[in-house]
Amino acid sequence: MKQSKRKALEAAGWVVGSAQDFLGLSDADAALIDLKLALSRSLRDRRQRRGVSQVELAKRLRSSQSRVAKMEAGDPSVSMDLLVSSLLVLGASGADLAKAIRGERSKGRHAAA
Image (cartoon, rainbow, N blue to C red; front, top):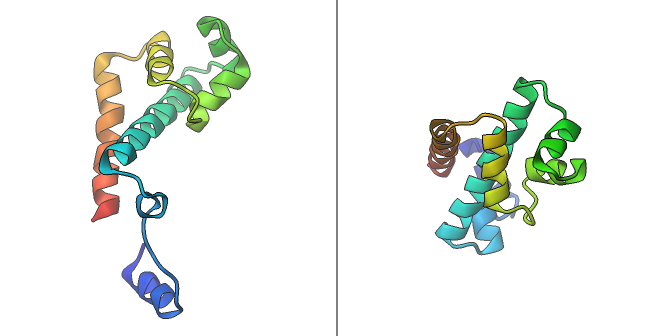
C-alpha cells in the first residue's frame, strides 16, 4: 500500500495492518499459508499452460473436479501432500516446486517491507 494512502486511511480513523495482524497468526502460520497459496497458484498456472482441464486433472488424480477447484483456490481442507502430488502429476520437478516456493517468499518479503 502506498504510504500516502495509508496515512489518509489512518487520518480518517482506520487501523491499517496485515492479514496476519488481523487474524493473530504467528509468523510460522502465515508462512505456511503463503506456501500453500503459492503451490495452489502454481498448480492452476501449470494446469492451464499445459491445456489440461480441471476435469482431466481430476481423472489423473482419481479425484473430482470440485476437489481440483478447491486445490487451486487454496481451500484450507486441501493438504500439502495433495498439492505437491498434483503438481508432480502435471510434470513439475523438484526445481519447479522450489521456484514456486521461492517466488512466494520473495513476494512476501517485499510486501512486508
